[in-house]
Structure formats: C-alpha cells, structure tokens
Length: 218
Image (tube, rainbow, N blue to C red; front, side):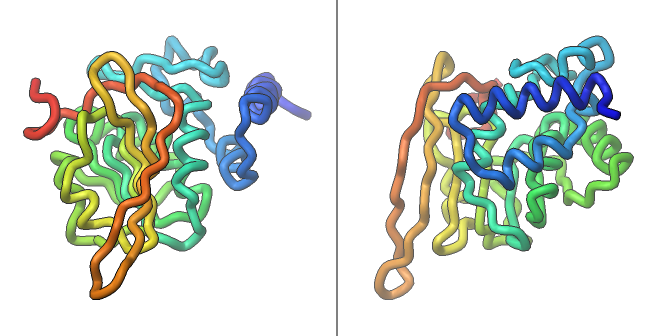
C-alpha cells in the first residue's frame, strides 16, 4: 500500500516530467531519496512540493526541479567520481549516490556539514564529506568526471576547472546576486594535453551565493 508521502512523491515526479525532466536515472533517484529527512521538522509536510525550503544557517534546500535539472545536465555515469560544492542538507549528494556516482562534497558552514554528515550516515549513504572552502574544490581526489556547484558565483573558480577531468562536465549557477543562469561546462581535450571549454547556458534561476575570495565575501 502506498503511503501519503509515496503519493506526494508520485505527483512530484509527474510534475517534473511535465516540466521537461527526461533522464530516468535522475527521476528514479528522486523517487528513492526521502526528502523529508533533509528538511526541518516543521517543513516535512512540504517535502514533496516543488519548492525550495529553509534549512539551518539561513540556507535553503533547492526546489526539486532545480535539483533534477542540474543533475540531468551533469550527465552522471554510474561508477564515476563526482564533486559537489555546497553540501547543504545533503539532499543533492544523496541523489548523486542513488545514481551510482562516487560522491565527494564540500561544505563551508560547519553546522551544516555536521548535520549533513549525520543525516547521510543515518540513511546509509557513503558520501565523502569535507568541511572547508568549496571554491578550492577537493584536490586530493581529483580529477572528477562531474562537478556540481549548488551556490551562485559571478565566475567559475579556477581550481574547479583544473580538477575537472577531460570530457568531464561542470554544472554551476553563474550571474549576479539577483538571478543566475545555469552553465553546463564541458572540458574538451585538444592537442598536446590542452583543452577548451564548451559552455551551454540555461534558464534563469536563483541560488544562495557561493562565498569565496574571488566571488562574494561575507
């Protein structure tokens, strides 16, 4: 028998499909991850609405459509290594692991890092987490076939390009503090170990800012 949350989740999946999400691996991951565990207690009843919700430290868990859209553009291949910048509640990291990725995630707010670590462990996820400045990436485990940034920046942090593998994909919101475009950046190898970046830009979105020395500083 389907629970109320199962019914709400089915409605959410149907809505995402109507909004253009087509990757079955993304949709199946969203079906599997229990979003109610990644939101505050008072917002659990809204967990399967297609809305962003507040989490601790004045941050938010992204709208499910935004998560699905960015994840689809990441072109995740099971078994590959993915870096996430901005762990937040841990929801995006759980989606990526459900898709078969080996997930590394960096969070700059210690309270969020500790809570996400606890939540992911309780749910059985094996995401590798790090507390620190995500604009530097996580060099020890590079290169990554995919990098996803869940906060907005006026430009791409150079270390993330350096740590992206050839033929890898970086998905990042770029713009000002009011609105951003989601950039899908592909690192294409050329002659003599050089590379070029192929960038596709998508609809306007709104994210919390990525705080780093070459972006926005608190």
